[in-house]
Amino acid sequence: MIDFKSDFPLILSPMEAITNKPFRKICKRYGADILITEFISSDALLREVEQSIVKMSFDEEERPLGIQIFGNNEESLTLATKIAEREKPDFIDINWGCPVKKIAGKGCGSGILNDIPRMVKLTETVVKATNIPVTVKTRLGYTENSKPIVEVAERLQDVGIQAISIHGRTRSQMYKGQADWTLIGEVKNNQRMIIPVFGNGDIDSAEKVIEYKNRYGVDGILIGRASIGNPFIFQQAKELLENKTPTPISIEEKVMVCKEHFEGLIALRGEKNAIFEMRKNYSGYFKGLRDFKPFRLQLVSTTNQTEIHEIFNRILEAY
Ligand SMILES: Cc1cc2nc3c(=O)[nH]c(=O)nc-3n(C[C@H](O)[C@H](O)[C@H](O)COP(=O)(O)O)c2cc1C
Image 1 (tube, rainbow, N blue to C red):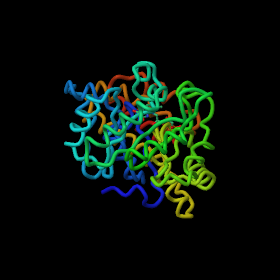
Image 2: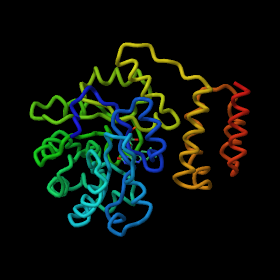
Image 3: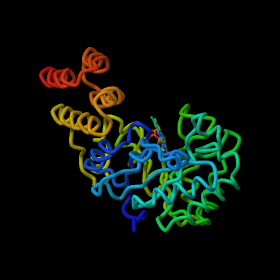
């Protein structure tokens, strides 16, 4: 069984259309300790929507891995839990954090933060539906005036979740402003909390992992946006955690990993989708290269696989 209490895990924060299998595997190799799938709609799972089934699949080498589900009613969450359980993930993570209108507006994701008793009840339903550990990822609260996360975390612990990940923003904040970690720290310091408390939000460098670990005392940290096109952040944070100097990543290595990512996406999603989806990653992979803009423009405008490889080669020649 997964030990969430093991040495300060670095967790790849789940991201729709980003943390798919090829990218997860790369992050794992660079030191991510725990992986989580993209969020999967429980209703879509019940309807056996092909894409949702694909999103659940993972390879043994990715363990420990959680399948993340979202939903808004007992029946679909229970059935989705049973379906996810068949894949034998190490844990099932409930998404009570997504702020996007089409999700939260239906009472899924962070929409549930409007109705804490219901959040607790639905979470209990999922816990009771499976023998696999259940975790929750959520936010501080629904609005600036209501941030009940300390009480929420206790109540979720009481119904049997095994760990909680907290993004230091409210639903109404979406992704604006800064993540407020003080409340995450309060949850962690609450004497009643026994389960691991993982912090999330705005960790944009390996140094910040160490700084926030020390400042807020959390049991682990999730890294989201800063890992896009930058799986190396896990390695660098790991090195800092071990009091080592982070190894610089050469351009050769970046191009190699970027190619591997692209090929993996082609295998998973087909050439056309992969070319399109890769576009979100290039800024991350090639951040900081001087006069990179023309290369980036070429990468995000071509629809041809061979041409993309040629651009990669030109990048290698130029830097
Ligand atoms: C493109 C994108 C997709 C996301 N998809 C998910 C998701 O499927 N499940 C989830 O729990 N959070 C999702 N999130 C939220 C992230 O996991 C994370 O909580 C948030 O980005 C804050 O962390 P960061 O500042 O390290 O990025 C997503 C965020 C982004 C930017």
